[in-house]
Image 1 (cartoon, helix red, strand yellow):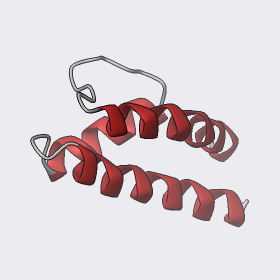
Image 2 (tube, helix red, strand yellow; image 1 turned 60 degrees about the vertical axis):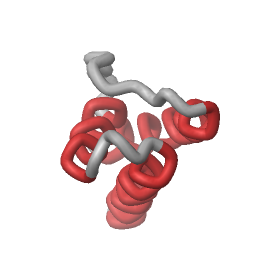
Image 3 (cartoon, rainbow, N blue to C red; image 1 turned 180 degrees about the vertical axis):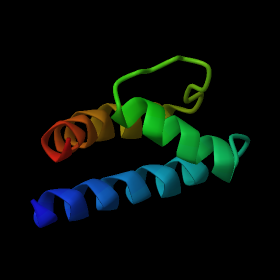
Image 4 (cartoon, rainbow, N blue to C red; image 1 turned 90 degrees about the vertical axis):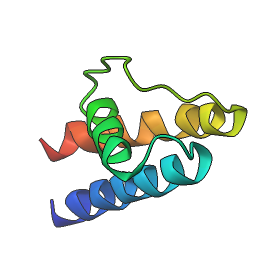
Length: 73
């Protein structure tokens, strides 16, 4: 169980860092908000990736983070 939480925390941190790298105009607060909304599979759609690199990252990141979120809770 501890490994699952560590993996989830790592994926969430990676999501925040990459969101800031790929989408400059989003900002840190909105990056954290975006990552938590996507990881919990709520997905309001109010913040989206506009760059191609950001969209590719999101496609590769969403499955592992939602899976880890499911196992953690």
